[in-house]
Length: 369
Image (tube, rainbow, N blue to C red):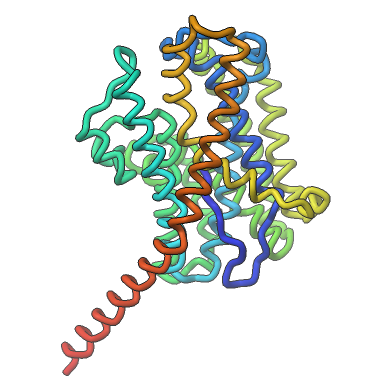
């Protein structure tokens, strides 16, 4: 799930406003997919179906792939200054405050109304608060956190380039990453697949390449990467159709999936060629700001409210009331938590980082003498 809130990078890259709109639409697609179909069909996480939207929203799970493409674009933009310190602090400030609040709210509601379908322990909650529960083999408090773990691994790969001062050679590593991912599809190795995020590398690679086109120009190698990632993405997403159909207990059309994925590539290329200026002139920050808390807070809480109130309201009132309520809660989290804590947290992290740098410098100087 992409998390981006910087207005300007050190290379004077201006904010790409339309990406906020696309992120929000992708997030809504995921929300509609979960609320209208997935919660009822997949493992019976809710008792309420909403078939009115199911024929369309069954493809909403693909919104996550658009998230990853936008993340590739934005994260390379954020890292392009070459500063590991600034990159790390920007990610910490953007990710953790909203996550802490969303995780806490989800945990509290799970204890209050989740039983018997949903449960969580204090130990599970505390480990989840580190955002590293996957690496401790601890179940997430909310199932949507899986995409955060994917994002964190992508951030780690970018951080490695920053550590070795190779972010300006990112294009070489994008090509290497893409080739490696394809080879690991043919000759699988669990740990290498995990490290190189093979299942989603194609979308991150496409997004980062779109940023290079946007920031510089279209070159032959970038055109080849886009073409390969487009074909590879369609192959991956249509190849898994049968597994998704079993999960959501609905038929999916591979041609529709291919068309949706192709639309994602078309959108990102239009952004790369600066052909979305009509949308970019509008300020979409306010909807982009909802995306991260909306994604974090909607799934399990929505399912639990469904289960607790299904017999009390019309499904139509419950469905749309829940969507509006989750949007309002997301806005409140952004205003009361993200905006209020970001500046203080950023300032304190910079002070801590500078103090550690000074301490390291003094220790190094003393060792030399």
